[in-house]
Image (cartoon, rainbow, N blue to C red; front, top):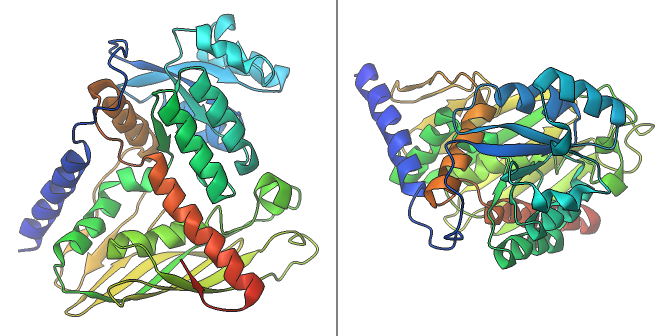
Length: 362
């Protein structure tokens, strides 16, 4: 029976993905026919260097076509390592000239959150589709402006929520959709790690730092995806054990969510605690994931003995391939800009609750 359930979950995950790839008539009809789309990475920090660039060597539907960086030495290193043509290398000042480059189909914004709005809007005005790393932006207003810019310029916007492309995460999303164990009653969702850095954008408010926008959205997503609902209220508390480092933003955030069905979620996120798990208690059973949002190895189990343990070679490669398939086939993205906006709407309410010490309606 366990094998049968695993087979069912595998098929369910594929069916779920197929449903998300429904027809989308908004994509510009003039999109060029290509076998692979050219991707330009904007910002060459850790995530681009250690994860996205290597993943782009594994993708089937896209490739690393260009880069945007403010550091000439990085540009030279990447040019040699990935054989990037000089004409496909930009800095932040001449970035808008990317509009004239047919090699670049997609701009992937991998900058501090405070810079996301500017470069998503500039990319959209240049006529390029956009992938934007999470968190989408520091504010709801920013997110709405980014979505509008892409809509106005007839390009697509995808948010880099790699986990929603992971079949292990899709499996528990399917459980929520089918109500396999009845209604969700209680969720415990956590995502955090110990960050030893003291001078990073994540510790600077002006750059969009704070744990809530970074690791916090994983804890939030765990609750949202496990219920299949949007929260209606939140009560939150921020804290720090290292005030000499986290003097502008929070190190740890704890927040309680209420959902329309009556489900409740206790969520935790931190730069000072290693944790990565999800537990969902239903009317007639439970589901556990640990880890729930890692780069690889996400796995879980259910109270009926079902195991969630799909093998996935590379999350980022699957994410970018699936997004590019959607662009080329003119179908819906799995994680469009509107999904990023949903999270930031809750994040804003969380910060308001911290400030007021009260429950905030969302």
